[in-house]
Image (cartoon, rainbow, N blue to C red; front, side, top):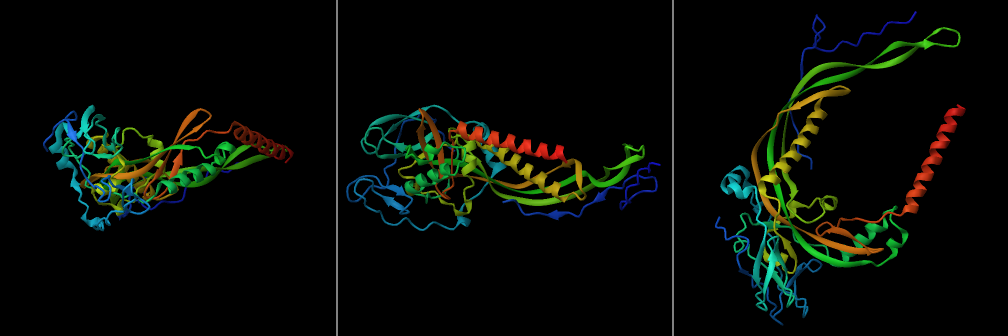
Length: 407
């Protein structure tokens, strides 16, 4: 005779009528995972900064030497003052700033501005997206003052570039050499033909979080159920997994520090994510010495939009924390109600090397984190290597099916 399904094991809090009394999981504190506007079209002059005492050229930040160096005569400027401790980096109240900015907190001005080079006095038309680049006529670094261009929020801290151009070049070559699907000749060629050094804008967000949660906790149990008969007509049983559901609830407390959200408008976002994170504990107060000779991008993602992305990322991480607190073997219907306090932000600059190379008439882009040296690039895929993997896959599948049929 087929045996009847066995009853699930008793669960603490079972009522006499068979109902499940909600189980409260102890609350747990969990550490985190790791102004006057002038308009974008105003004419401004580039800053006259960091003039070489030997030849009059403008010094540029050299990541290898960690100093300002004249690109013309090689003069190394006096050592930049030691950066203040990161505790000196100021955080700003997010809600207060959004209220103060009003519409400017959710929009960014587009357009052009006329910039007069402080070295050769040429007047150039520049996009409002950039705060620093080279003069088209004399080649000297142009750096604009955030106050002059009427930026609602200026960066107050940055990460000094520490990876040289040579190191960045080899980091990208090593990255491509490790891509098995890339064509073999790509790995051997000396093909990088353009390298730019850029400071990208970022927002960082911090918050304390209190989050009550509720869900159904599931425990697996097994029963024997009929599964037909054997060759001699005798009943065959099989084990079947079932789930016993019990309502549970709990509370998670945590905090987040420096959730990074890119404010760049032009770089491939997927490529950028692959060279993150940036070590924000190494931030130093903003100083033009560090960005001299580098292109500096003005933020294109407004504060409100970035905050929505930042707190969306926090909520996703809080949901994962709550899910890990649910007892049992599985769960369903997880509901969370996070509340945030002490919401702060800051605007920072982070350096990268942008590299481009040609392969069979097409341009491919790569990037290297100029603080950590982490590299990533888009690359062509060898059709022969893809075909080889497909063939090997079919061979393995055929062998497995053959062995199963033989068994």
